[in-house]
Amino acid sequence: MTVTRKKLTEPVSGQRVGRIDTARVDGTTEADVSRQALADDREAMQDAAQFARQVRQRMGLSQAELARRIDVSLETIRNWEQGKRSPTGAAKALLRLLDKAPELALQTLR
Image (cartoon, rainbow, N blue to C red; front, side, top):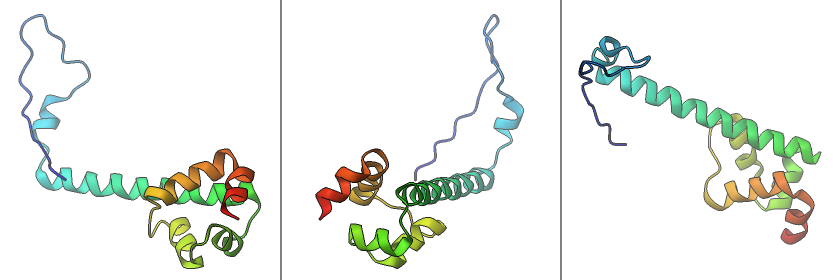
């Protein structure tokens, strides 16, 4: 990921800065930015894990049964739900479809 740094300048007379703490922004180091990016990535993985688990639970399926029905390994389902891996591409689209129209999705996969 490319990180762009920009130094904030003091507002021109009459301009508002809003709630931006310019001293804090200017004092942010590259290590701070990297640390926050890593924390954001972890949070996104946990959100994806929670979504995968909720979809499966709403359908009333075990991990093994969901794995069999969507033709992926049990380990893949476990990794998604534990946040070790995140579904991407077609798998992510399939989870969204299973969330919105589970019967249709499962019928189509037969």
